[in-house]
Image (cartoon, rainbow over all chains, first blue to last red; front, side):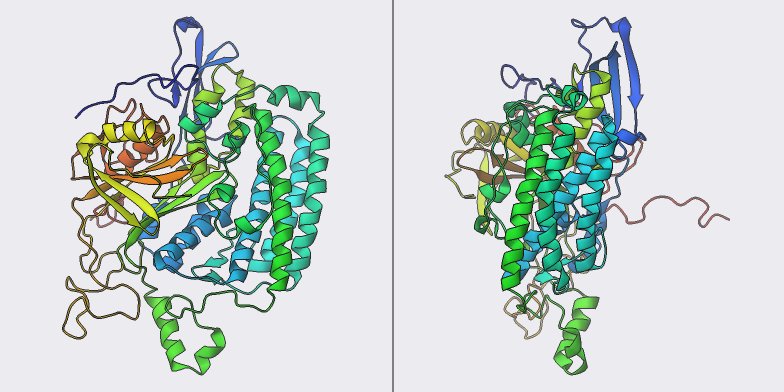
Amino acid sequence: MSVLPATRLYEGTRIPSPCPTILVVDPAKHRLEDILTVNFGPNHPSTHGVLRLIVDLDGERVAGISAVIGYLHTGFEKTMEQKTWWKAITYPERIDYLSFQSNELVFVLAIEKLLALETPEKETWMRMCLAELNRIHSHLVWLGTSALEIGAISMFWYAFRERDMILDLFEMVTGVRMHTRYFQAGGLAEDIPEGFYAGARAAAKRMPHAVDEYESLLDRNKIWLERTKGIGPLSADDAIALGQTGPMLRASGVDWDLRKVSPYLAYDEVEFDVPTYTEGDVYARYKVHMDEMRQSARIVTQCVERLEELRGKAWIADDRKVVLPPREELHTSMESLIHHFKLVTEGYRVPEGEVYVAIESARGEQGCYVVSDGGTKPWRVHFRAPSFAALQATATCIQDTAIADMVAVAASLDPVMGDVDR
Amino acid sequence: MSAANGSYARVPGLVATTGDRGETTLVVDPARVAEACLHLRDVERFNMLVDVTATDYLGWGREGVAGYMGTADGRDINGVPGTWTSSQGHQLVPDPKPKRFAVSWHLLRVADDPARVRLQAWLDEGDDVVSVVGVWPSADWYEREVFDMFGIRFAGHPNLVRILMPDDWEGHPLRKDFPIGGEPVRFSGEA
């Protein structure tokens, strides 16, 4: 077995070597007897879950760091192998509990790709509308908690005020505020309630003003600026080498958004811009998040306009081998009753094959790799979690920062520990 | 995004190329993964490794596995196995796999001409495969996860230890022979 030599990638990289995720204290730069090793987490309010960082400090400076994960590992991928396809749809949402609809969407898209299922137009636009509302929701939680950790406590209340407005919409459509399980292979679980159109329109109208409000609180706040500007930098080359996607990559100056690069759903039919900043620091990541909320609101408005035109149209594919028959038919049609029974007990069969579907979730490329053996349960499901990739950049971003800034940098990576550990 | 962008005929150790559902899979000789990866990074310009994962095909196509309801010859309705068209999708025995494990590297070209490709190598139990941390640093945790979940070792990895499961865990949970509810239950059945 030939082994690749551990080499420096290119000149100027800040990625530690030989292990890219572990920064070892450099004896040439630090006196080893001055190093104090501190354990941070796993239970700490600013770890966004249960993340453990082992930090070697030289005074207040971080000289060495390594991240320990796995505390939230729940074996989602193993569990999903035991469930029929339609039951397994419940699980992905619980993986990333802030952008639940993206996870649900990517799994459903993977099933539909294997089934080669045509879906109605209304479903495409509703999925897009909810995915964007979910992006705003996820960014709001990110903004509120990240600002809270740097001491801007009031941001938390403002961000959660708007978040509640979006959760109310989810509740109206799906009956629950989080983990909605609203997407099905073939379409939606139910038709869109009449009140949603006005509610979503109002939310989309409110958001740009709300974002202006947040920025007016933060953009001229000297403490916020000093704690974010120039902190935790990541160059474009390092970001690509470390597999960063989403706001992390765009804050480092790479204009890359799967909604533009390989449009899925109907993203090629809506107008929106991809915000890009070049600094690659915490401040740039904050700005990307803010601009993305404005852009998402733009998309939501366009989706609602389109959905209003599609009132009364089908919201699920008419494929009785995959989709449950309408409830009222069960009383009159023997065939529908048989279909219902077979679909609920045995589940639908998905043709043999392997697919990798990727979408742009709130925190980057959310990928889903699915293998089917032609049976009623997935043979293998794997989620490419953007948070898992983001945490691989901890050592690169946090090196040489002050211990107090470590929290700001870790928060800016936007990790959802459920997504990291799955 | 074009999946079949360019021809990959010059990838070292290439065994087969498949294009299924718009996705390109390059199957390579497991002994030449390092060369193939360097070629794909430097010549084909796949600058990002988005994911490394594996699949255990133990028991693939056997009766009663993963919801598979047929027999080894498919469901024999009209006496001619393989020709009966099912009303519930595909019910025939899936194509056999060459070895137990498939390791897949999902590559992405972040550039003006974006492309995706899946590199795949087949391994038997106990086989090693080379670590590509030196090619793409993002391989670090992905390879640790595959090792943790499947027990596949990546030769040359700088820190190949468990990542999601506890350090003292026994077995590799995503293997098909790892039992559900496999944790020993204390006192159960004890006299």
